[in-house]
Image (cartoon, rainbow, N blue to C red; front, side, top):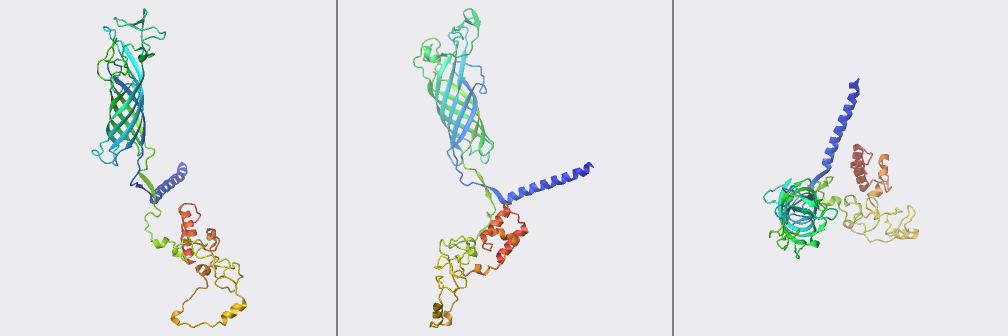
Length: 444
């Protein structure tokens, strides 16, 4: 019993799977991905976060580049060459530096600091493209540049929450009065304001040289993950007050300060041209003969089916390209001086009805004879065309709705609309109907 219920479900599943495969194959026939020959590359945006680690006279609790104070990075880069070996990179870093020192023998060497920094830098980056060629998922890089570094308000922690100063004793304890305490790590005192080391030349900004290296991991054509570390060598010894310029208290050495920044960032290309585009293959592989789709008189009727290929510009035409003749007197409307002539009335070349006297005069008019080789046939009027011959052709009932201009004739444009609707799955016609419609069009 269960098997009987299961069989229909398996059949439905198999048919659905086959239909899905057929749809995929059909899409592959209609479209293909092609590479853009000359894509335009715009600036790429990068946003990331990382850790800053300070190196100087003071120390901290971070032993390697994978530890440090949380910091943030924003950058914009632009390719400098067509092969993408070189980039120009503008970056901004915001974070904090901190450090401390403890000494039981030299009580002047009990200091600490924390300072916020903001850097704005420019560097040139090389990605080893001429060494590692081809499509790469992992791209190593190295860069060298300079930056402007602003150190906002370097501060120190020298008092507790009640404003009482910490006292560092030779026994290694920190006291407030007679009470043994630990620092609260609230950096409340501005070093530049109190100037505890007698350095009147303290400068809160400087320049730095930057060396950066790491790897880009390509996620897609527009997104890459960067893992890197940079070393920042500043041209100052005044980032946090401990300097060789000090005159009292703690006097530092003459070495300039440094810090490292290890970070992870996402580079996102939002504005460049796509590397590939989807091309519709409906007519991509067809080599058209210009004669087949030319329209010399610009009446929107192809010359291939235009019975009046020299219609003046702007004159309304019927479905076979001939100027419209509303009263069917053989003179097109744009030349017809009497556009509502009664049916069967004889008219002149301007569409005006001829009187009986005019007709009689024409019959008795002496005309000069011509040689037979000079005789040629002249149509009844400029409106004589295949259109007038096919007015009696009956359009099959199922195709009448395609006759949008109601002229009892399936034009070439109306045929194309029906075919496009069929391929766009917006038609009730079957494949056999389309073949029959095509045969009827050429049989009209």
